[in-house]
Amino acid sequence: RPEKKPKKAYKYWDVPPVGYEHVTPLQYKAMQAAGQIPLMATS
Amino acid sequence: CSRLHNKPTFSQTIVLQGLYQNPQINNTGIGTVSDVEMQEHYDNFFEEVFVELEEKYGSIEEMNVCDNLGDHLVGNVYIKFHKEEDAEKAVNDLNNRWFNGQPIMSELSTVTDFREACCR
Image 1 (cartoon, chains in turn purple, blue):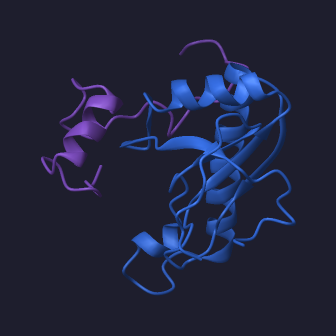
Image 2: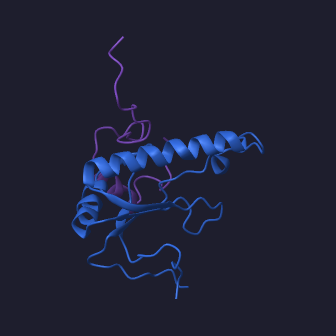
Image 3: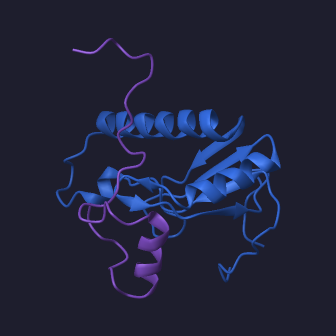
């Protein structure tokens, strides 16, 4: 078990949608704007 | 209100649209999320956002989360930095980051005083 970290591990930051780990958030938003992905994709 | 708000070029305040997801909205069963759980969820969210933003982009003067259950402004998070340049840096960087399985939608906001914030 690693040493106790002073900072809590993040639960939300930098968590990509499942299946879209390979695209950047900017690319993802462009794909949403183009209608290639529904706006509220479930994560 | 037309909801077509002006977008400022410079501001100390940024808005992260729909960042906070109220667990009661996503839960179909009524009463499945207790008030204590809600508060805990909110506190964790607030701390995680505040700590990361302050550490990465600069000192924060104030942060507000719209925790309403209606559709208008829902989940919006407003952060007022002490410095305009920190706000600008944050907006640019956050627009290319993920949060909870979604891309962050970030822009500068005209709100400077949250107690006075109201569409005119």
